[in-house]
Image 1 (cartoon, helix red, strand yellow):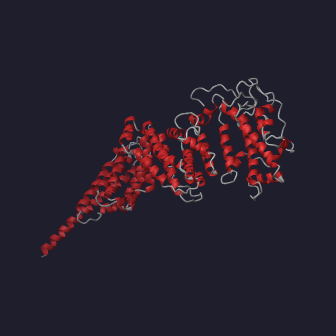
Image 2 (cartoon, rainbow, N blue to C red):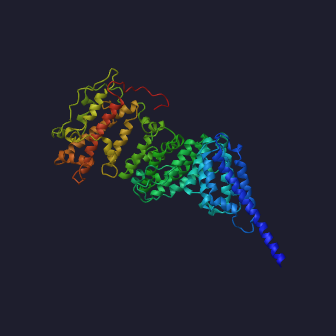
Image 3 (tube, helix red, strand yellow):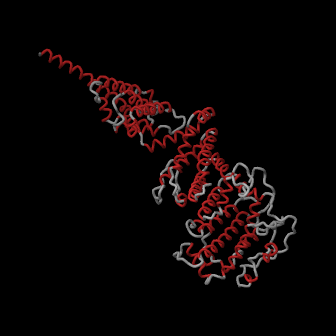
Length: 614
């Protein structure tokens, strides 16, 4: 009996002694690594030429051997407990980040990968394991062509294998938001450095492009149909790096879904910008086909006003975010077609552009405003087909000019005031007269073109003195009214004038002549911007007579629009607001003409532009 007890004690002691030896050896190797940083003075010696790699390998071998010896117990051995309690992985992660000695990050990545792969005991649920793993993940993929690229791939492969075995580990290993961001960054890096062969393979043999576009379409289709266009237009600051809506903005139904869609659209735009041309073109065409044509176009052409309104507002905000040339090219082709012929609505009902042009004069003011904003956003994009398809194709050849007619002898002859039904004797005898007497003839430059000073004065003198109020208040500028127009009764008028101002700014002689030269000799049946404004002024001066205390009410309305006084309701308020907008619009046109062609600079040369130039 005693001999049997002695044998058991001897066996127990024999089993215990290797564990003690293992722990001592493990601690000795770890102290050897830390002592290197205390004693070493050479900062240039690579890590692989020190004893650090050897000591890390010994520590790994000890952990693996210890686990095999304790396989029956199923518990962490003393060496593993020491590694966890003394935060050895945290320290190694810090040393790897510092890259001291040079190449230390490579050694750390190798050690992490081998420990996670070879030690069977569950590790990733420990805080002192998954926290340094997260930090090490964030260090990877920051520099293209990194010297540790091979080790980073091995590390992430091991992690993916662990997650595949136990999906619950995902919550320990990865911060989901950071992982999504890192995945997007890595994909951007991948598509930007891809070779021709790799790019072709990615497009033809991988699900990459379809998966990206499918997710974009799913996010779009998850948007609430009741989104307010004003909320859509007001949501700014969304990017793929920060896809959530800014917290300081007012909340509204569907805000997070809209932010998610715009964030992913921004990411697609960045991918198309950075990618190899083969990938860029394929992805842009896929977005155009799947999102623009298959989803957006039916909504834009739908009989439901809400569908038209929401889809138009969403398309406008997408155009506002769009930066990539390839996707812009596809968007222009989708909206305007491939040719550059005039999009006459009555002749081409099949084209989307024709329908959108009709929407600018819709029975619903909201749809008209939304569509005008869409065209205004489109006009700001750097693509020559936009201005050519929407404007220049109607002006080329100057069909608005009278052919073979002599130059008019006076300004009055140019405007044909006596033939205009608005310019009647009763109107002229009412006491409301133009603010300045028209000059006997327009001044011209030596080249026979109208002088800019005459153009400026013509627009400034359009509105009669009785209808002007800006001189009584501090100058605010037309942009003030455009900015404050959202949601107010006069917003449609302002949106029309805003688009016209945008058109007038284009530096093309035909656009300048047609929109800004009041002395253009028009062909029969043709109208110019100035001739339309003359008729509007005529109507205005007749209606003024029907508004009691007109000057005082007009000044009050201007103060209301500027936010200087409370917005109390007045009789004829919409008309009075229109008068204020008209005055500011005429001033804006005068300013555009002056800025485009200063008095002493050459202007209005109508030579044909070179092919392919706007």
